[in-house]
Image (cartoon, rainbow, N blue to C red):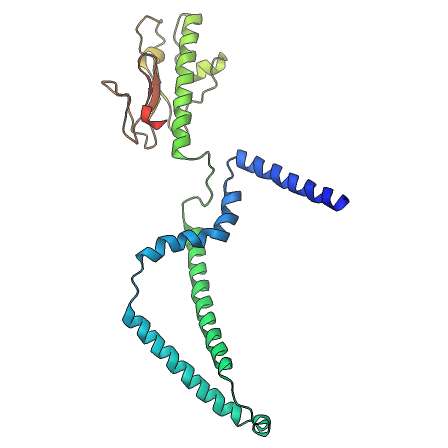
Length: 252
């Protein structure tokens, strides 16, 4: 009974740790063991359809393997049969020993090639500038959703601020300091958010004002769409307008 309780407790602890790591975006904790165990299946699924076996190459390999097998059997048998113990016993070198030896040589060859490949890939990974581990929160779709959420929050709270103060906030810092919106000055692509002129000038609010805030997008080159279109390019801007709503609307 105590042993069962202990195993249940260990399983529960592991489950909680997995939930925590998954919630923190550390999906690699799940992906690494699954990839190591079953990644070869997906690899074969990608590679096998692209392979074009050479019948002549297979035939040559078969002939060479048979020649090596025959030569090995003859050499090993000649040496083994001349030993005093085997002559007295009348024993001969069995074929299965030659087959085992040839299989061992093939295995050593494969291990050598695999080891060289592993060393090459480890060196490439170690020298690569690309991150080996990426959080599930650090993805293009997450950045787009976060930019749309931040800009909508900032615009709506800027309007609330203007209604309360009778003047638009001139920056996101003003909103933060006044306790209206905790939106940072820069987006997740490390580019500063762009505010509409009515905001940066600190104008008094009027009906029909186009209050907008946007991110320049993944490449930092996006601009406010004029004339307005809700569908900007893939690397275009991401934002929210008090008149037109969010954009791009295809990035949901």
